[in-house]
Amino acid sequence: MDESIYEKLGASLIRHLCLNRPDTIDSKTLVEHLFDAMHSRGLGGSAPAQFAQGIELVDQYLGEDKAFSLIDTSLISKGYYSFAISCYLILIRRFKYNVNISRKLAIFVQAIASQRDLSDHEWWIYCHAAYLTGNYEALSNVSAELRRREKTYDRALNQYLMFDVITGFAGGHLDIEHLSFITNDWSGCNLPCQGDGVIPIIACDSRYFNAFVVPKFQTLTSREVAIHIALADPTDQDLEILLNLRGAFPKVSHSIHKFHGDQCVSKDTDLHQAKERRLTFYASLRFLVAHTLINKTTKALFTIDADTTLDFDELNGFVSSLHRHLGDADLGIKLWDFDYGPGTSHEADLVFFGQSDQSKYFIKLLESYLLNFLTSSYCFWTLDQVAINACRRFAEITCTGFRLINLRKLDPSLFDSYRNTGGSEFRA
Image (tube, rainbow, N blue to C red; front, top):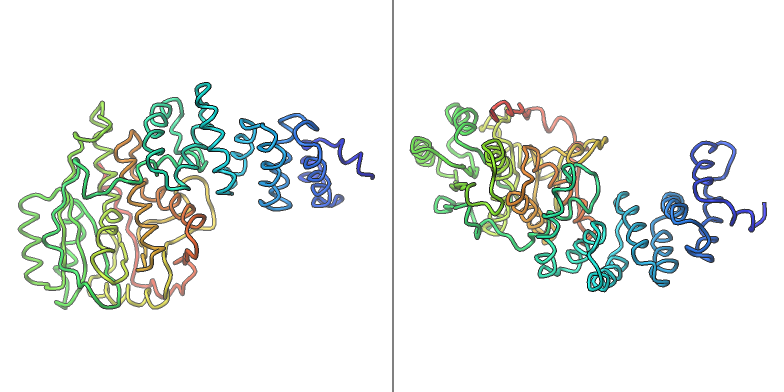
């Protein structure tokens, strides 16, 4: 088959051949010829839909570099900016990113914005590029528009696109210490500032504190347990119990956090939304606390669900053993092999944070993501898992040398004493 015939084959036909006749056709060779034809003829050589399908095939069979080169040489350089954005979205869906291409598109998006209203995809490109380049001023300007448009989507977060989750970073300047709807008391925080090792963190509201945390202290045989407890919206009785625990266990550290949901930027319109926002705060608190604590100590951190079956007598030995196996990892999380949507491949019950700059970068991303959604209309119980998913993928792309270890790949015997009971029945 000669070159001219390959040039006449539409991308949709080649896709069909690659997917349905892999036993009789050399798919990669076909796509190589397709790439040559698209590169030489550009968009003028095929219908837009076929060209877009060709971009996806090139990425799948030849790699992202060649796919991005087609966007650059065949579209951006020839002025097809809006269509370049559409093709860029195809690669974003496959979690492929190119900072240089994104910056170029952002320039053209700004030019387009001076002439007409931007489409949703164009706004997403602008937001994405602004974050990659650290342009928080631009993110602040675009954030309000993205939020206004989010109402036109059916929970846009559930669409598995980076452009949907990247809007969560639009509040990259947010910090838990400077938000009016959260007040924090760190006076009980007595973490050791220096030294190696790891500190476990547990965050809970009043119900989890009394149902899971207090009983574990009642069965302790050693006074040497070291842990930080972040307690949300405690009652007077909770505070009395906590101070008694502090007196009995000198290495216990604590902080108090109160959530004033009625002061959120986005006003809740019904009691269900208000309750969901508060529960989302409780579920996210351990990660918000981790961002502050990582800068108060030189030790690594382990966030642990309050409802684990792990006895506190075994707690410090458990996290120390895991720490030895994780070494200089920046992040340790439990990852599943399947991925059915945002957050489904990640578990948030046990998360390790190292003391590296990469780890601190990740924790800041995570804090910004969570706080931004706590001030938006998107609040739900599993936000912490979705946030870890988005921030992990983003850190791997933008942070040089970022090192993640899947806790599920470690020796299973390390977790013999650890089980997560899944106390979500306490949501009610």
